[in-house]
Amino acid sequence: MLDRIVRLLQKTSNIERSTYIWNAVSATLLAIQAPVILAVMTRTNGDIDAGIFSIAIAIANLMMYVGQYGIRRFQASDVREQFSFEEYHGMRIITCIALIVMSLLYCAYGWLEKGYSNTKFAAIFMVCMLKMIQAYSDVFHGNMQQKGRFDVAAKATSARYAAEIAIFCAALILTRHLFWSALICVAASAVLMFILSVNTGRHYCDSMKPSFRVPAIKELFIAGFPLFISMFLNTYVGNAPKYAIDTYLNDSMQAVFGFIFMPAFVVQIAAQFIFNPVITSYAHMWSAHSEESFKAFNKRITKMCAVIFGLTVLGLVVAATIGIPVLSFIFAVDLSPYKTDLCIIMLGGGLLAYATYFSTVIAIIRAQRSLIICYGIVSIMALTLSGIFVDGRGIRGATCMYVLLMGVLAISLLAAMYANIRREKIKAE
Image 1 (cartoon, one colour):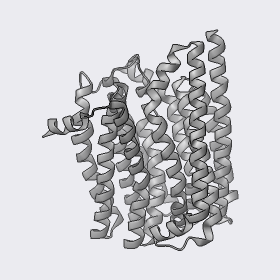
Image 2 (cartoon, rainbow, N blue to C red):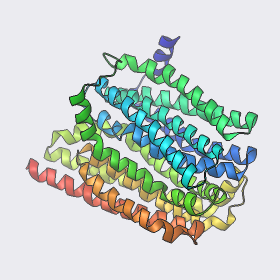
Image 3 (cartoon, helix red, strand yellow):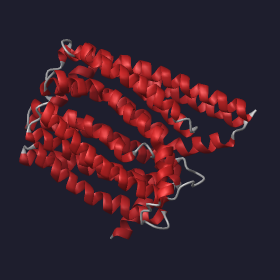
Image 4 (cartoon, rainbow, N blue to C red):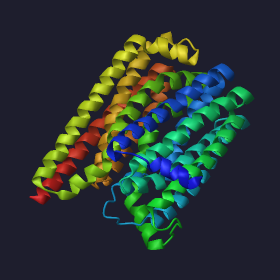
């Protein structure tokens, strides 16, 4: 049966077309996962649990980058196989253990300092474990992408995401308990990961056994550190308003912000499913280091920027017209007072999509140290501005802070990206 599953995932008449289609499906399922679960949760458990789940997703996404260590893009673009899969696998086990420890420490901090209830502590930790499964399976998917079969990885993630949505929602309806629903979902997701990702991954490497060879692991940690810091801080900055709401407001306001934040997240995911499949082709183009390849590289960047702009404009139009009625219906909550806030967030979502794309390009051209500077500056801004914007200004303060942070981040990354491209072009000449 396991071999039959592998053959089913590998089956395609056109790898490139299959890659785009299944990556789109995977990205769509990831984008709707939290909104669908929140929509069910508001009806089964109420807005308090919805607020807890919203901050849980924000914290879990942050912890996920501890597990991934930002190394997926490095691995997928490692076309010369500087490191073996066994070394990537060994490193990922270490980072996933770190994810578990960091999740426990954060939950303990929330319990001791923020007054988290036992249920909130346990629920947040379980959602973090769901992201740990995603982080671990990602090392197998990165290897598949490196070997030219990103479509197989996308099919595996699509199946798991769809199952997680169905299982979590069914558990909510049956138990009406956030923690038990999350626990059931984590258990099912772990089984699916081994059946789909691990089982299929053995066909794309010489050995599944992880390597903990110290020189290689050390070099990987050093090489990946700028990417880890940038992606960790990227997630922190993107969710900074949620962390501020968790500190200064309440779970009901967290739920409202989570409801109107979802469409902006969809814009970012939509942009990612367009450029994620081409990471390896970007790497091949960049490695040529010729005048023609530099021109083609810049042309690709311009085209992608236009695509993200179009998605952002479309998102703003939808937000300004039918956005609030649709969201109010989906989440069974009257969101009419937050129409302006929704439009502000949609603008910030477009800027975040630009920032994520620029950081991807910077990773491909191996100029990761620039990312630390850009994300470091904006993270300091987020820490400084959280109390000023959110405490006393509520949702409007959170949305305004979000768009300000995303604007500064996108502009700084754009400048860093072109500065590094120009420097490499001068070297090549």
